[in-house]
Length: 282
Image (cartoon, rainbow, N blue to C red):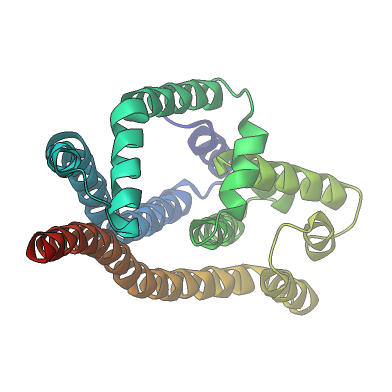
């Protein structure tokens, strides 16, 4: 049993109590498929920019370590005054040559320590809050978690699982502490007779749109349908955001790479032009 996530076992236990095991298994399969699809979309959207940026960083490192130092020796042997852009480029090259390895090691060490701390639960609330507030990626992460909540709640409600149990099970699917704590807080509010929409709104974590849809579902007795509608809405919203982010990131990455390459080219060409000018003057 430990090979399966805890929330799988909780969902199946609830299904056995309600006598709807086949329906819950179908719903669970749909949920897992939708969740994997959302992750694939985000991964595919970020793969191209990440590869381009990695290649750009690698190119800069190769230039700084192997190519530009040779130009620096050449310029120093001429004992001439270099243009500002060339001096800036050589200063950056010296910094990378001197401190680049140390910075790389520190980055790797900090990354490994952060990963170990997160795996052990130390500092996870802090890192989870940071992930939700990251520019560009934060809104996507919020949408993924909101869609996951709506999708699983709809599946469990349709299977006849009590709402308080569904809330507890759904909270266990959340790998983000902020959302998990918000769901547990909302579940406690439900136990105290506050319904579902009120406690969710009180957490301040969930969007007003999903709260309003749940409120309508409670008022009309169509909570399962409204949760399904909300899940579909946020699935489409996630698709739209991913396309928008991809449309913005790809040109931005190309622009940054172009600026770096252009700066290096201008710095070297201006230096060579200055050398030719001084040679002609002499």
